Length: 292
Image (cartoon, rainbow, N blue to C red; front, top):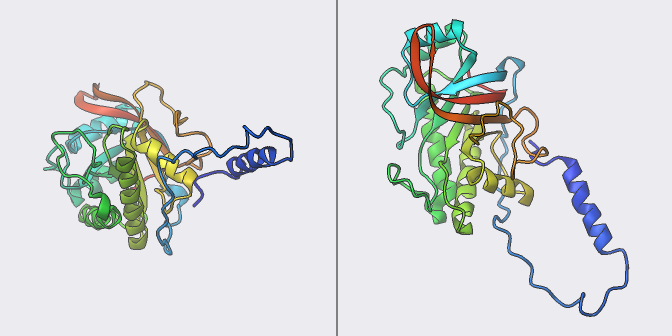
């Protein structure tokens, strides 16, 4: 899986060529200068399995919503015929999910799938070491981040199997927004995500990652440019700009995760009513493989 297009590599080579073309420079210009320390260093883990192949029927482009708890099937039935949405985010696993899931069973998934719904499974586990969220107190340990990521992947696979979502399905690791003051915090998140991806690939599942465009996504983009791997197969970025697109922005430039590998959460915590059923949701635009 390539996360950085060849054009970006070529551009970096051109900069190097221009910097070494033999042009005379003053002694002052050639004086040693301390190199800037990158925020994210390159980390590479073995990934012999790699991501499962994408089947054409798994690809989805269109509107999706996510809700804190799996909605009643009657609401899904009403929305399927009247709303613009064709996919739904469901919180399938994780010790730090924000809501109970009394309806989320294999039978619920089976019936929702029969209506034509597609799924974005979400796992909410350990958060960034520097996270300021009071309601999600469990944090990544930087010294054990990669192993913790693999452990969370195993938990996520159990959650997928419990609701009848088999191999080849994606599952998105939910890392909520965190402050960007400490590079070590960002590095721990990246190492955790590498372990998460490695674990999912080894189990036959696709790796997804959800976070704020300005924190987790920015650090994953830096990891891609540094040459880290294995990185998630799909990014789900939160940027509440009311633009129903997957154009990215900020650190998520057009050369990264560009091959139908993006989901954009563009509006949050809104009530919508279709077919007489009202739900509180976040709005998303998808161009990526989904489960279902």
